[in-house]
Structures are given as C-alpha cells and as structure tokens.
Image 1 (cartoon, rainbow, N blue to C red):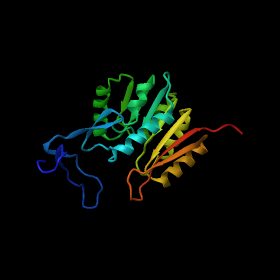
Image 2: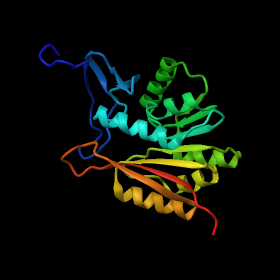
Image 3: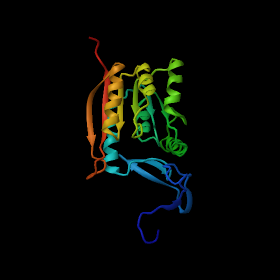
Image 4: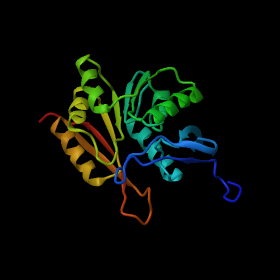
Length: 224
C-alpha cells in the first residue's frame, strides 16, 4: 500500500474447490474493505465482494444512457432487477414515486443499503433474492411496474424472468448486457411476449478486447 498509490486495502479469499469459480467471502488483511466510486457526480460504496464496472468513464456513460432511455416520470414505479450496489437503481429512484431492487449477492445488497442512506432515498424496497424466484411471486400478487431495468450476469435472463417482466406490463424495459449472444436471446424472448427492441447502443467498456457491453430499449409492440 505504501508503494502503490490508490490501493485502499488488501483482502484475501479461498477458492471453494480446485476447479470451482466460487470462493469464500473476502477477509480484510489491512486497510479498508470498501471504496467509494463516483459516477456522474454521485458516490457509491462498493465492497470487495460486490460487482462494479472497472471502467468508470464508460460506466458513467452507461448509467446516463439507462436513465435517459428509461424516461422515468414522477409518479412511476421502477424495478431494477439484478440491481447490485444501486448503480442504476438510485438515480432512477430519485426521479420516481417508488422503486424496487432485487439482488442475490449479500455484499451488494449491504452496499446498496448504505448507498440509499448516502443518497437519502426513502422510496426504495430492496430484496436480497434470486430474481427468477421472486419475480413470478410479485406477478402473482398483482404487482405492476412502469419501467423495468434488467442488468443480468453474462448468462442473461432466465426465461421465467422475461415472461414475468412482460406480465408486469411496463411501458419501457431497459436491458443492459455484457454478452451480445445472450442479449439477442433475451430480446427475442421479450419480443415473443409483446416487447420489441427500439434502440441498441454498444459501449466499449473493455477496449482492445472482444467484450462488448450493450444497452437496449424495449417498448410494447403496437398491435397488428
């Protein structure tokens, strides 16, 4: 930490099995276990075990694009599915009547709660749950949404998520993807349930690599 400028802390974790992608929660050795990242002039607490984009300039551009395309209005109910530390959720909630975030990773939910306090927002419900398991239950309860943001992992959305999102009857869906193949699959699934892609914007989050991030806007298709 003395030799490398900007290192906030050092942590360690153990891999769960030789070939497993999973690992134990990080243990702090020295320094801080979290940092504050800034996007578009607002701060987000991010712990070592939580996901956050590693290219802050392009992440800020992506967050701005999501907010622009979502077009949240004052009386709206907004859902952010796979909401992480609140990167998209918080600025959308600031413009909405009510917001709901769903995230399975406990460290990200803890960060999101801290960020809610940082942003002084009182209109957000956070669920530490699997999206594919929770969303059908919300549909069964008769819940509706005006705007839905989806930011799934590289594997994309479970089929039940696309079905449930359509049944929530939002006027707009903003889908953030880190894999063009799963993006195409999920857009096809949404189209089969009445939502068509209107705009797609690639973002070069990792220059000189094959990784491509994309933001897509879907709206209800006009009846034939």
